[in-house]
Length: 339
Image (cartoon, rainbow, N blue to C red):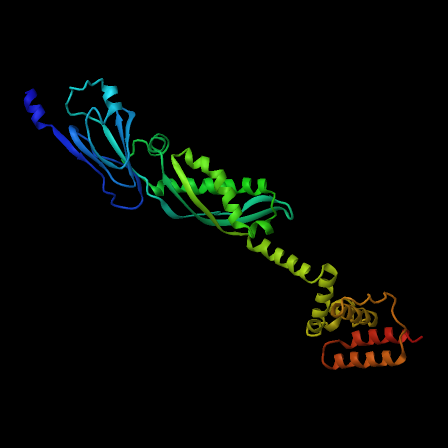
């Protein structure tokens, strides 16, 4: 009976793994009801490593090459089973293969804006994205901390964790650098190096090596970017005063087209003669920033100026821009200036 049981046993004399896809990182050689033939062969290809697990304990590790499985090539298993050099029988052991190929062009990014403290703007929310590359370097660590006893383990199962690890480090790196957002956006390569240096030990704790990490873009959410663009525009025009002057000059032709006419600029009703002078001064100042600002005290009003203004206001009435009541009120105000 014992002889028949021995004959019925199935032995494995060749152990190898041909990767059938590009995403499997760990794969367990099928061993159920099989035993490894003593003196069999193990083939580990380039970009692979193999690990023997004996009775739940991680034993021998093999790099690329072809091995004849004997007590000489399996020192740890030999020690665990207390084999002597003459013991040559089949044995049971789980064999895991690990792919050490480099994983290129892996995407990372912030699914939502990350709040960080900025030197110039205070608290801001920013987005960032880029690519990274990594590969498995320590199958023992990867097996004990990540893949475990699963029959196979893929990059899809791992990379959500890796992406979250990268994004979680952005706030710390941005705060530690002390570099303003505007300067950081222009130094993405430096930011990427700092981020990689922080992530290297975290990847190593998974049995991985982070080969490269690139930051392709750092940006603000659309509403914050619009505010930043406006601030940049103000600075480009020489500050808030120059920007206000420019806006005033731009508003004059637009106001005449709106309901209420030039009164909408701020004269209340009608077009104030004093407001007209201030607008004119503002326009002159915006066109010639080097010129001294106009005096705030209104210049003396001549009868000819009053008459000319009334005629212009009357023209606005005919065009339907001013109402008759607005015209009469403004006319009375102008005539008082002659008293």
